[in-house]
Length: 103
Image (tube, rainbow, N blue to C red; front, side, top):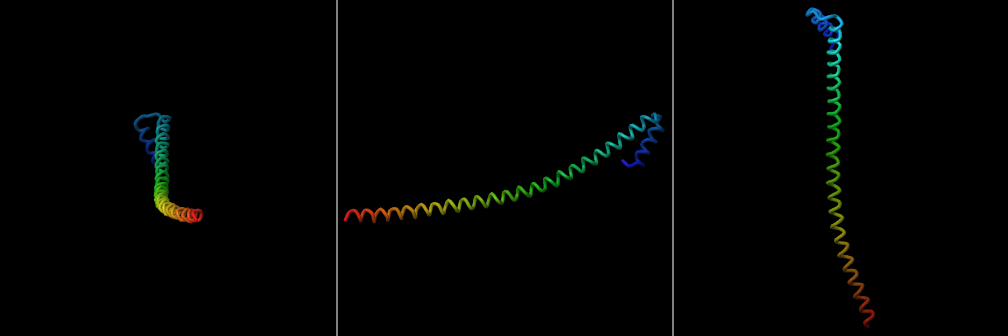
């Protein structure tokens, strides 16, 4: 509440017969209330900006998780191929070893 508005409230209260002391108190309280409302509005704007930033961060994390899942699937597939290759190599080595001892 501006000083002019505070003065208007004070004068209106005085015209209604309220004592000067009480009129000053009421005008002061209304002024503080308006300041508090302005502070809350600023806090809400700050929170909105933070939430927007967090929303962007969450989107980036989701994207990163999707990439990690894809990479994990690729590694599992590659691991299966390596296991099969190792199996064939072991079979070939065992065949050579068997043939060497059987002759």
